[in-house]
Image (tube, rainbow, N blue to C red; front, side, top):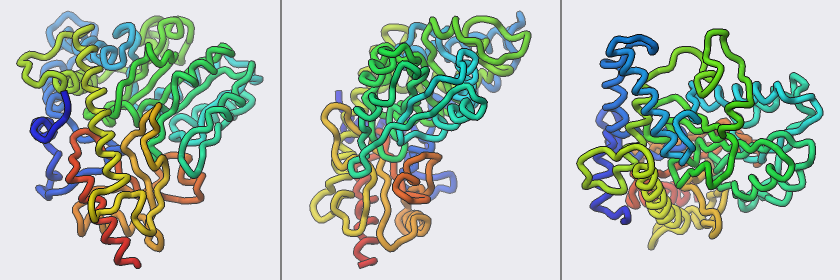
Length: 429
């Protein structure tokens, strides 16, 4: 099954904000890297949980039991999304940043100060500052950054391998750069980590909406993503390998459970967050069989349907990526627009693929001015910032423009962006 124009219409109807913003203004939403639009299933589930299951867990009455069940079902949905061992391996948090800090503090309890942590040069600061804090507290000796090729945006995998040694305690990388769209070869990185007995962590926040994310295939100890980057609401989730869940000891209050995901979670859980992510996961399962009248059953059936959907999404987004890079007819693509500098792969690497994220600058024009013009004149929502990433500084830039597409975006929307950029480029000349 493929995403064709007819199916795309059904998909877009699942997103109330796909065509217009809250004021009714017709626009093209291309700021998906900062947070995707929300699917109806997620909205409906969250609303129901807010009203019906508003009580705290741990009591015998209906609202409390419903809250407990909603949380359990939400964990199971995330487990199916990630092909995790089970819901008991899914931890919730307020943000990916909070989860990474929680993880780093727990790992810090095992460290002596002689160890190092290895990451990439294109990380979001969420996967940088928690490790820097360990250095500030003298829990690690060094945080090492692997180089990436500034011309292609691709990771220097050999450089990363050279940085991993017997003192490496953690190897932690992004599944894909939120600025460059570059994907990391997670299987190769896992091999490097395991050879020296290091923990392997993955920041999947940017990539989770763009392709399959299978923790068993990746072989990671930890993987973190955020709901609002996956057609749901704010709030984040961490997969943790069973043995790590048992071994590691996070900071917690005295009365919190001493085992399972609950020992990692600070304060009362928001059952509506679990309801919302469950709705988003069921939406993804729906995509593989849109004629089905009932939600898929949790477990193997839902996992299989999600996997099919994510491969379908990846294939469709590859078409958007090629169009964005090369253009069509008289509409030049990002690789060919005069005065436009693209940061990241100018093609789709055959082995790893590429996320449909495009960061760029236009010669002689300020990023924020371009962003304002794209919005005011062309009705295009395109960001201009540093995206909390190390990447802009690596190119000696304070900001970059960024457009990120997801599967509800159309080829027409890609061409709308390209035509606007062609127009701005020709006017500058």
